[in-house]
Length: 344
Image (spheres, rainbow, N blue to C red):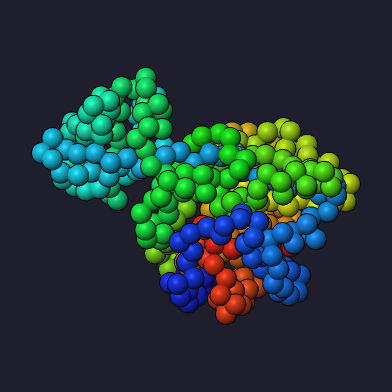
C-alpha cells in the first residue's frame, strides 16, 4: 500500500478548535469491523456497548506545559517546545528559529525568576536542539510557572487559560506527555464511576505522547518512516486484568491509539503480554495484526498520518475511509478536540 491510499478530503471547518462544553456530550460514530456497518450515536451511548465484566484500558499520562517563550541576548524572540527529558534539567526540544541560534547561546525565559536555558548543540534537522535549563534543580517548579499547554499545530488560535484543564484527561496522573491522549478527553469522573459501578473494570497504562503524533507522513512508501520514541509502561496488574477478561469471555476496550501502541509494544513473539517499561517507536499499519484489543475508542485523525494508518490496521482501510466519508458528510468534529469513534 502507498501513503496516497490513506488520504481523504477534510474541510478545514471540521477541525475542532474548541472542546464541547461537556466532555461526554461529543458525538460517537460506531463502526463494526465485521461488516462495515456504521451508526451515529452520542458518546454517552458508550454504555450500550461496554458491558459488565468488560475491561476498559486508559492512558493515564499527564500533559506538561511544554511550550516556553524566551529571548536571545540580542533581543530576538525564541519559542521552545519540550520533547523529552534526557537527564534532570536537560531536554531535547524544538527551537524556533533554530538556525540562528549557535551552541552556547543562553535563552532568557524569565530573568526575574532566574529561569533560562543554554543551547548545548549545533542546529539539527527540523529544529531539534538540546537545552540545559537553569536552575536545573527547580526546573519543574519553573515549568509550571512559566510553561504553556502545547495545543496541536492544527488548532490555529492562541492558548487560553481553560485549555490547561480542557486539554487534559480527568484521570491524568503521570507527567511527561507533550500531547494529550485525546480519546480520553471525552470521559468525565461521573461517567467513569458509573462504568465501575456497573461492573466494567478499568485498567491503566502510561505512554507519554510525543509531538511526533501530529506529524504528517510524506514518503509514499510509508514503511520507510520512523516514529519518534515515546516512554511507555505496562504493568503486571493491567496484563492480569486483560487476561482474566479474556478468560471470562468478556471484551477488552482500549481507549486511544496511544494505549493500544503501549499494549502492542509489550506483546511477545508468541502473542502474550509482558509487563515492561521503556521507549517505543512501534509503527502500526496494514497488514499488521492487532491482538491486544477487541474494540478501540479513538478520535478522527488527519489524512496521511500514522494514526490513520493504525486505525486502518485495526478496522481495515476500506472500512475506515467509508466511516470517515460518512463523518465528513454528517459534519463530525475532527482531531484532538473533536468527536469520538468506537471501532468494535
